[in-house]
Image (cartoon, rainbow, N blue to C red; front, side):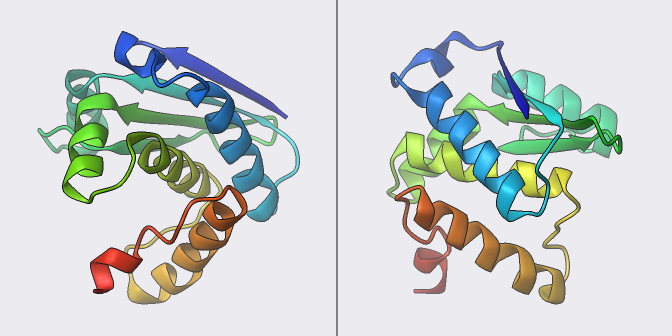
Length: 149
């Protein structure tokens, strides 16, 4: 299992140890999602890069927190891209640590690479409990708990 981090936005270099946490989270998401082998790339970018990717691939002219690009190959699963500014803003608005929120987005993005989705309520009932369980194993609380309160 190979997980490559591409740091396009220097702000992703802090807090220290974030890259290690991302790799651990991605590995755990792959394992819990039923995929033991393969490679993926995590792009750590700025909001403008994610806005451009979102426009190019989804037709949406706005920055977003995370995008997943499944490769549909056995040996290479695809790419996950995160936007620093959007992630930081969401973490602050949701009263979460930046690192924990970013790790959640990595887990979320990797699960999308494996075919999990949350578009329908039925799909969300499968994906969200899996995310919660993975994050629990990583010592991160339920990211959806505050939304329900």
